[in-house]
Amino acid sequence: MRTTPAPRQGGARPPPTVCEVVVLVCLLLTFLASCASEGGAGSQSPVNSSSVSEVVLLERASDGWRPVAEGVDSLLRPASTMKLITTSVAVDRGILEASATTEVWSSADRPGWVVLVGGGDPFLVRSEIQELAIAVQAERGNQPILGVIADASRYAGPLLGRGWMWDDEPSPFQARVSALTMDEGCIDLTLPTLLQEKAEAGLAARYGYSAQVQWDPDGLYPEGFQERRPGSVADHFVLHLREPGRLPRGERVSVSDPAYLAGAAFAEALQSHADPGAGHLPVEVVRRAGLARGIRIAVYRRPWRDILLRLNKVSHNLAAECLLREVAILAGASVGTAERGLEVIHDRLRELGVPEGCHRLVDGSGLSHYNLLSAELLASVLRGQVGESESAMTFRASLPKGGIDGTLRQRLREVPGHERIAAKTGTLGGVANLAGYIEGLDGQRWIFVMLTQNFVGSARPHRLRQDQRLASLLELTRPSAPDAASRP
Image 1: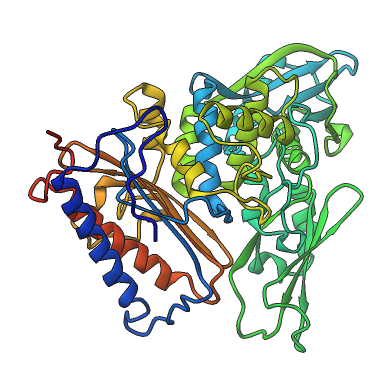
Image 2: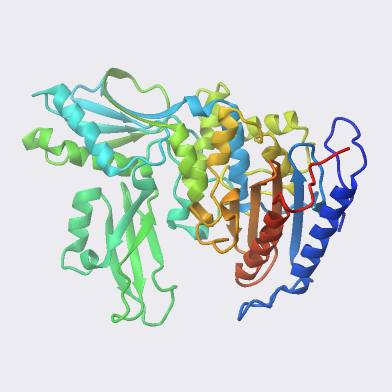
C-alpha cells in the first residue's frame, strides 16, 4: 500500500502537519480493520483477496493531498464509472446549453410524406410521439398523409455500441444506439397477449413487430431467454419457457432498429389522418444525411441538462452513448460518431494532464469490457469538476446520493451523513466500482475512487466493504475529528 502523500502537479507542497499525520493513521487503521473483517458479514460469500484486484484512492480536493493511494496506476475496467468521463467532457463542451430536438418536416421530394427527424433524445416516449402527431394533424388540416420517413442521420456508425457483447442481446441494458429512438429502443412483450390466439397478428398490427412463445421443457435455452430473429422489416421475438405453471408476466426487449420502432409508432398515431383507402402508412428509415426537407411542422425539445441529470442517476447506457455522439457534434462534426466523440475525450484528458497510452477507452457508457483506465485518470476527471461553476455543480448534482436516489438508493442508508456522498457506481460481471465525492462538514471536499474487480460470485461483499470504508471516511470529515485542513 502506498501511503506517502502525493502532491498535485504544479510544485512541491509543505510536509504534512501533525494533524494530517493523525488523520493518515486513523485512515490506515480503519482500512486495515476493514481488510481484516472482510467476508464476515453474516452469510455473505468470503472475499478471496488473493485474486481480487482492488484500488483505493482518497484525495483532498483543495490541494491534492492523498492520505490513501494504493495501486492508482493499475489499469482496470471502469464499467459505468466511464460515464463520469463522458458526462464531464460533455459538460465542459457546453452540452448544458443544448437540447435534444425531435422534429417533423414535410418531405421536399415526396408529396404527402412527412419526415420524423431524430435529435438524439434517448428518453423520447410514445406519448411524446403522439403529441408530435397531433401537432402535424393540426398543421396539415385536410391534406392526406401518405407515408412516414424516419430520419436517424444525426448519428453514423454501427447501432450496437463499440465493444459490446453480442450475446447480451436483446437486453434493454444494451439497446441499439440511434439518433431516433422511442421507449429507449425497447418493446414490452406481455405473456397474456402472447398466449392468446392470434397474438402474433395483434402485436404486429400495432408496432410492426411479432412474437411467439416456444415451450422448452428440455432446458435448451435459459428460461425467459428472448431470441430475436431479424425480419425483412422488423424483428420476430421468441420467448422460451420451460414450465407452463411458472410464467413470468412478460419481458422487455430491445429492437434491432429503434428508428423503425419510432417511425411505426408515429405512423400509427397519424393513421386517423391518413388516406382511408391507403391502409397502414408505410414507414421508411433513412440513416444518411442529405434528405431533402420541406417545411418544419412540429418540434419537441428536451434539454440535455435534464437528460444528464437522469443519465448518471440511473446509469443509463443508451443516454451515455447518445451523449458521446453529441460530444462529437459539439466539437464541430457534421454527424455524431463514437470514434469522433472519443477523440474529443482524449483531447480533454490531455488538457487535464493525463498521459497518453495509459488507458483504452472504447465506448461512452462503460458497458464494454474492453475499456481500461486507472483510478488516477478518474481522479483527474473528478478534480476538474470540484469548483462552484454552474457546470461543475450540475455535474455533481447528476451523481447518485448515498442512501437517497439512483443506483445508491439502497446503499449507505444506515450510515450517518450518507447524504454527503455523491458517487457513480460501476458494475459488470466481476466488477464493483465506486467513484465520486464526499462533502466534509469541515468545509473540505474529498475525491475518492474505489475499483474492485476480478472476483467470482456476488458483488455484495465488496460493496459492503466499500460502504464500510466510506462510513469511516465520513466520520473522519466531521468537525470533531482532527482538523486535516489546518496548516501552520
